[in-house]
Amino acid sequence: MKQKDIALIVVIVFISAIASLVLSKLIFATPQNRQQQVEVVQPISANFSKPDTKYFNSEAFNPSKSITIGQNANPNPFSGTSGQ
Image 1 (cartoon, one colour):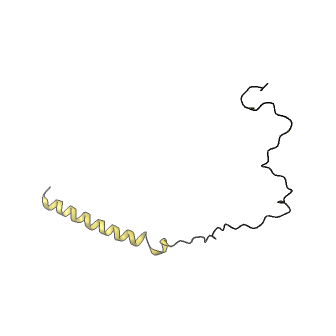
Image 2 (cartoon, one colour):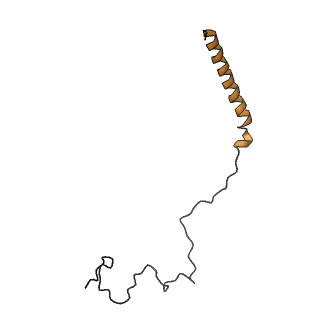
Image 3 (spheres, helix red, strand yellow):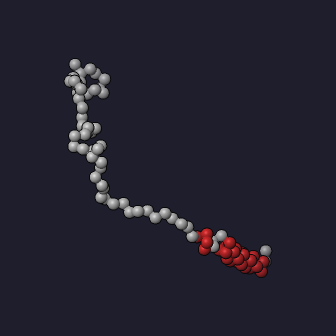
């Protein structure tokens, strides 16, 4: 290739790149395509209202309390031995 051919190819590539950039901005990135609607979320507060006293009262069952039925002779129940 001659030096003129290489220079002509570089100029054509440069012009086509600029043209494709301008056309893509006009076709694909219109201001209408860039606008989106989003939900507005209420901020989270650290304040909680009191729970219903019908279900949560001072005499209610406490599920986190340890319950023992009978005497447990095996201090390590998952060891595979009977503990006796």
